[in-house]
Length: 315
Ligand SMILES: [Mn+2]
Image (cartoon, rainbow, N blue to C red; front, side):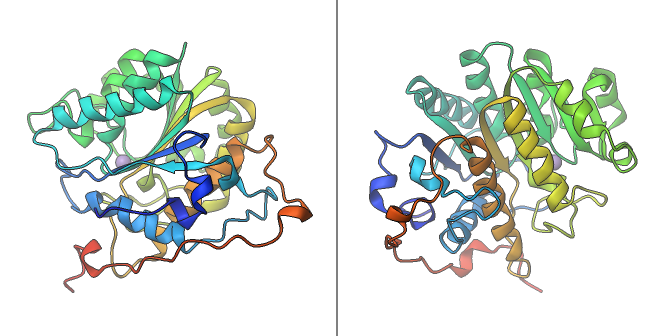
């Protein structure tokens, strides 16, 4: 990834490290994906789409970027998966120590391992809410415990893991899974109480790891391992808004955006999801519109999307 401007092209004064309440860490990493490669290009496509997104949120009547969003340099170019996990842990920990609301855009799902480790050290009785098509509970895969298929193994051992949207796994994962905390997609389709029950399964402090393949492929096709029968847009927003309102969400990540030239809408879906989650988090803080701030502040110049973001566009 190249050196970059502010998140979403927000005015510089809202992107200052010292004063921003929110930190966004791009992790451009894709070493272990087994099928569709390209999640390392996810952060750049996400940031480009974010720059082309309106910053006023109609539903909440807020402009959450005014809380300040500091965009860090991208984390990338690791020699080993272990190096990646250790570095993500250290960087996330640095911002948690500074009291920042710390968020991350991946990258493949293994980028969450180090982040969850850092949050679990900083927050008592942490729940991890994993929204995902896949259980990701293997202890090791293709020789590594840091494969994306193992992204939640450690969280399952060390936190209260709640899994939502699951519709693909190996039988062996069922043996380590806490099924009271699992909301399978085929059950969610016919259970009108799944949101209540999932929220009841969470403790007060919640870290959300959102794998974009949780969405139905009709909502977001550009992901490394798509699965049919996923979450729709508005039910996802309903659920997230409830989680943010009823629990103390301490941070989150969004992973597995795998940009594709023929489905650029996916980049915008990921960008909007991120902004919605911030809007829900800071709903009670004052970023509502008042007439004195209505004078439009100029956004930064918009970057042009480079062709090389797309790796799967041969056909
Ligand atoms: Mn997944």
